[in-house]
Image (cartoon, rainbow over all chains, first blue to last red; front, side):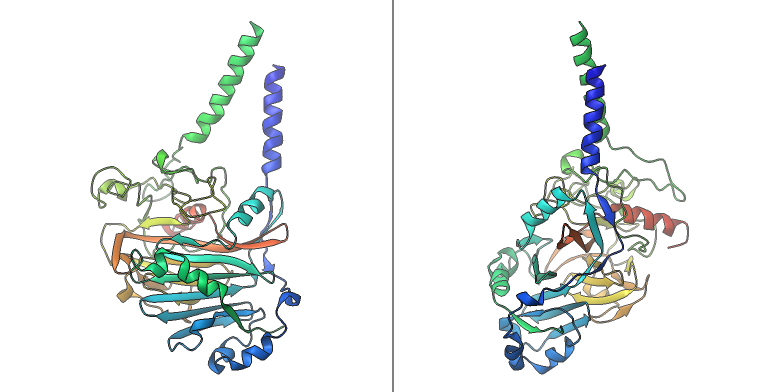
Length: 177
Length: 242
């Protein structure tokens, strides 16, 4: 009987420890502008004016793939808290997006989840034929992905080399403090 | 003797709890059209991976069901009949087009997924239309928002909630939206198909949801479980209140 009580108590304690307390009201993340390269404003003067105009109201650092700033087929969707830039290359769509919002906060009990999140941060993942990475810079989140017309044979989608190079060479485009 | 009884009791208790976790428990038929579904996290078949059990939280509350009309069927494409890892038969087998629904978030895949018990798995849910017909059933906006990107087989909708919804495998020539377009809830996006660029997949909508979680001061964007939100939204669709 005592053994059963111990088992039941142990189960209850484990359950209580694992229980997450969630606040689902969401909000806006604080940008760590002190970690942003101060010289970026000077550097952005050479960036295409059309792009600068499209992201002028975004209140977070705006990154773009260095080698594709002058592509003709670029679409920008943005507001003050997020941006998505799609670049159509030959048989490939390259997407970078940044977002300051969050939807839920795990107030307590999220230790295991935090560890899991740390394990995948900035990893390059190929899912559904799309290569992508999610990463955090300056306290806010970014997603970089590439989608191919030929997802199973285009090396830009089967290997992470292409996207990793773009990730390593992202340049600041702007961002309003 | 006492020890034997205690050990036997302990084993019985353990087996009871283990049994509870591994057996999918079909819910009784719900309102309208005999809709039924197995619980979130109970993947079928059982060798298709380990789902996120005991998490009935609705991560995307009040969304509209992503297909315009019922019936629709949530179940595995890979492990279903005719699937790559499934039992022999046609992808269009009628058993793939019947209730109960089965969650396939966290189904076995090679890619990292922090919210899955194995830390890898399928990041969304696959949804079949009423029948195995290409280009017949519309996918619609699950909430008011803006189309942020369109790839060769993907459409990205950022809702006013800040969540990003991804629709995969719609027929490219059927798309009713373009990048930068603001859409209303229930507005048509495109027709469910088997489009995967130059190759093809089975006829279905892959639907997933990304949101940003803040945990201990660390923010990260993740694919969140969507099955319970689908069940909730589908129930409302059946009631005529999508």
